[in-house]
Every structure is written in C-alpha cells, then in structure tokens.
Image 1 (cartoon, rainbow, N blue to C red):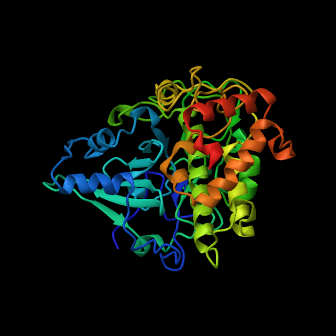
Image 2: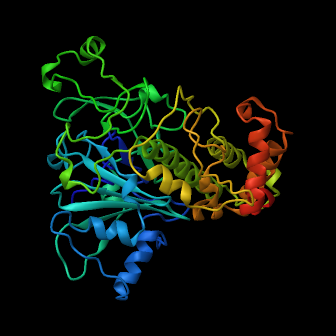
Length: 426
C-alpha cells in the first residue's frame, strides 16, 4: 500500500489535527457502495477533464503540482493553515521547522508537505461524502489523481468522531519541540470547542487579543524525556497568548505560497469540516432507513430525525463557543471569503463575518447553498425546512436556539428568502 497522509493534516492516526474519515466494514458502506461507487466530486470532474485533454497541470520545480492544483480548483492561497505536528504517514517531511500546508474552499481540501512524494486532496461528493485522492509529486506527462478507498482507509476508524461516515476531523494536539504528538484532545474541533482548546499543533497568525489557546507552542521536552506525560503537562502546560503577525521567526517561510496560517481561516475550517460530516451522516441515515421511507417529513424515522436535528443545530451554530474579543487574520482570507456567495437585496450574505461575538454575522451556515445539502433526500430537506421556518419566525423558542435574537432570525429568513427560498420551502 502506498503511503497515505491526507490533506497535509489528513492522516491515519487518531492524533491528527485534521484527519481523514474512515469508511466502515473494511472500506464499504452498504447503503451506497462507497468504495466502488463512481464519484462526481470536484476532483473526479477535474480528472475527467484532464483525461479529455481539456486541462493540463503545470509542474513547479519547487512545489510540484501544488500551484496548478490550487489554481485549477479555485482554492485560495489565503486559506493556508500550517500544521507542525507529526501526525501523518509522511512524518519525515513534517516538523515545527517544516509544517504541512492545508488549503481549502467550500468543497475541496488540498494538502502539501515540503519534499513529500505525494500531495493529498479530498473533496466533497454530494452523495458519497468525503472522497480522498493522492497526486504523485513528480513531473509526468499525464498526472493522475489516485482515488484512495478502503485499502488505505480501513486502518483509520473515525466512527466516534465523524459519525461513522467518510469525513474530516480537525483536532488539537500537544506536540513536543520536534513535532511529535504527546497528547490529543478528546474529540474533533467544532464550533462548540472553546477557543482555549484549539489549534494545538498548528501555527496561528492573527489578532487574538489576550486570548489563550494552544497554537504556536510545543513542549520544551521531547516525549521520551517527560517520564509521566500527565504529570509533565500539569507542570508545563502548553499555552499561547494572542497570535503572531508573521512566522519567519518560527521557520523559513520562503518555501510556502504564503507566510500565514490565518486564524479566521482556521475558524472557518473547524465549522466547515464538522458540518460536512453531519450532512453526510444525515444522508447515510436516510439511505440506511429500512424499509426506505417516503412518509411525510413530519414522520422521519427516529435515527434520521436525530441526524437531521444534529445537522440543524450545527447549521445554526447552537452551542458555539463564545468569543471574548475581536479576532482577525493576517491574510486576505476574510475579505476573499466574504466576497463570494449570494447576497440578498440589501447586500447581506451568510458569508459575512462577525468575529467579535461569534464567527458569522448571520448565524446560518453558508453550506446550505452546497451541492451536498441539496443532495439530501427530499423528505429530510422538507423536515429541515419546516423546522427552519418555525425558528426564523420565532415560533420555535426552544433553548437550543435561544442564542438567536429576533433580529438574527429575521435577517436569516430574509437572506434565505432572497438567495435560496427552497431552503425554507422544501
């Protein structure tokens, strides 16, 4: 089996800051034949265009196919996040002095490590969920994205952190000064994760005020020098205050497309990976329903309704961690991310940031516009639409949505009504 790391922070161990999800039953999901079903995700479509001779990837002597892949898939360089923990099978290419780089857009993730033999790419298939690829980092007249299925993924079991579906995990780890993981947080990083528990094993650039977090720091001692790890960490907690303006004092940034590991991009990454997994989990529960359901949306099977409710809470940022002050990035990510996506007649968008009280100004996820959301069964979308109508109207005043003010609810309803009314009318 060839080495598989994934997306620079995709990997096959539970200590990954951002890990590839794992398909079940030896790489197969019975409801959809995950390992053998044809993929229609952005990378699969790109490969088809390359096979027809419509697109060619240029090879860069310094960075291989990275610039070309980002360009052709329209993945912004400003999204770059840098991970220095050795949490991939390509550990020889990863360290605090040579971190892995991750780039992403709404439905694609790309990872690159200096001198590594492969790049790792994952994209979101509307029906399958996360689909994983590798691309050899050597000049070729016909570069090929190799799809990775159960052969490599079966050793990564993420049923406890991705809901048992092919998905993504963003994690926070404590790493020693050589980048080796010492301790791992208890689960995936999501919107609900306190900011003080985030970014272990990551570099973070941005304005964070006096916020304490786990980024930009390692343990002074190596794992082998600590003795009892828990006692060592109790004596020597890994904590950073604020963010860095730039990273040149940490390592040589000249090999990277950007000198940033933008705090705002990392916040979006945590939200996006979690919601992608929940969309996939909801779709899979619907497909597994036995017998297949076609009843009105008010009578979804309990497992499907439970998955849909978990998705709804994430879409509306229920239980999201509070911010203690203004957070800003150092790259163009905030501006570029906000500039895309539909706007209502008043110029408002679900991609507008708040970054002082919470992540977004209007707390409904922009992923409601995604192909993955659209691919949910009609009965599920009908159920979600009914619940959303009750929430934005104020008729649903349940505690899990108490964070939504009347103004929030009105704005969300108006933005959706102008930009994608079907979200409320399925």
